[in-house]
Image (cartoon, rainbow over the protein chains, first blue to last red):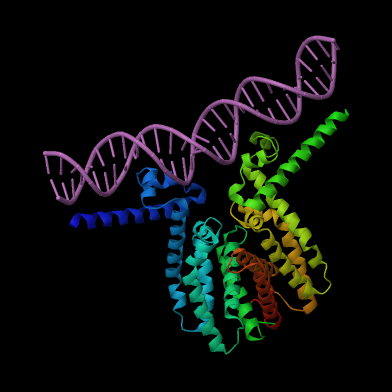
Length: 199
Length: 199
DNA sequence: CGTGCTAGTCTAACGCTGTTAGATGTTCTA
DNA sequence: TAGAACATCTAACAGCGTTAGACTAGCACG
């Protein structure tokens, strides 16, 4: 039965197209424009077809967040490839904030309240692991005891998120936010190198 | 004409009650439950009454954000009264994250995308000024050159916001977020004291 | 005292949203 | 070729923000 596999492929393709279209609407016109009917009509369909591929709007949003994390991961690849631990850390920080500035609406959905806290956390897990690895490598290289590694992770992650949030504001801007992220992270790392962090 | 002044007072009272009710719904049931009809029926009115006092839902949300900043300011009062500059800084940071954890939905609206970036920034201006004063006092006391004061402000503010955002997640929690905020801020301040921040 | 004005409130409606049920047509299977 | 499976549409529901028009109460003035 060759047709059934083709059917399945077409189904998967349509699902991908829906997701792609939804991300497009979100990025170009913001979350307010992201309606089921809008996504459907943009692909010359009607709204109910989306429900053949996503249980409801929340499910669609969740996949959008997942897509966002994948996109961010690829944009972080270069920075993560740096050999020097400090360079890797700072360039990753800059790339992170850069991504947030390039895709403000997507970033807002990725970290906003639209999708529930638990699912959001789960989707961010890979990024979290990456950061954990980076921090262990850094602390190993500089022979500094970070105390609770998990705490250090949260601090770095939270700081980057804070700077990225600033970058969305018109009064701060992407470029400056990137500079601030590097400064903040430098200050934190410097603080950790010259003092016990648990204190 | 004494009746007209009574009328005006009643008008103002009703406006306050609407705002109060809206904040109540937001804090207890989240932003999804915050509808015009819901606020109205909670006060045994119908929806159109709200439009006699607020132009639209965005205007109501904006006032909710303003209310949130006032509430936060009063909760920060004690910490801001500390004589020691370092204590003042760290206790304010803790109080800030504490507030965010106590009023997660309110905090989310205060810093989310629901109300436009410019108005949000304007409403946060007083808090920003407070932080600026604190930082100048701190740098003066420790005789450290912060470089661009504005940059330092954004860094501290962004960091606190980042930690407060973490505090909302179930996996982190309020108590730990407060500890992390103090740790992060300590690390940043330590970094600034032992190195030029512009580097 | 009665008449008219003003302010406050409600009902009804509009267009939009997410979502579902049922009908229609198209494509594959047997 | 008959029927099952699938893809898609139309129509509708309840709820949303919002507005217009009707109704009612209280006050001002002849």
